[in-house]
Length: 128
Image 1 (cartoon, rainbow, N blue to C red):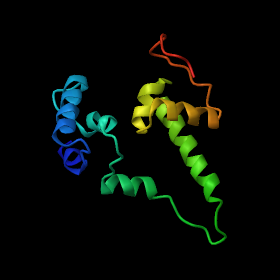
Image 2 (cartoon, one colour):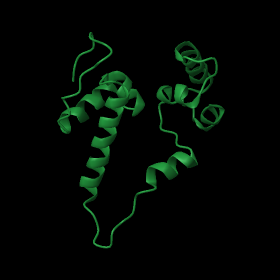
Image 3 (spheres, one colour):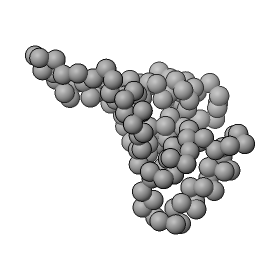
Image 4 (cartoon, rainbow, N blue to C red):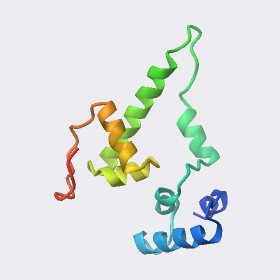
């Protein structure tokens, strides 16, 4: 958690740091603040070296080349699906996991025709 705090740029300086700490303290579930408690509140993506290794470990460019737009689209779609699965179909928490605004998240759901996920935990939430 401390490493994430140190790596973040804090575009709003001290006020943004203060607001971030308040939100994390209020919304974290355990007695200690963990990295996963902080990441959804940060406005930019911060990856540790280990995270980068995990994400890019299977990436290689074949000799024949690739259709980069298709590959990026497949990755984006898979990340949307995983975020929805981790949040039981709830859009706002899934968008937060991906560092997207809810509007941007909804746009991508439409783009990839991912309207078949239901929210299992919040019946009031709009179903996608």
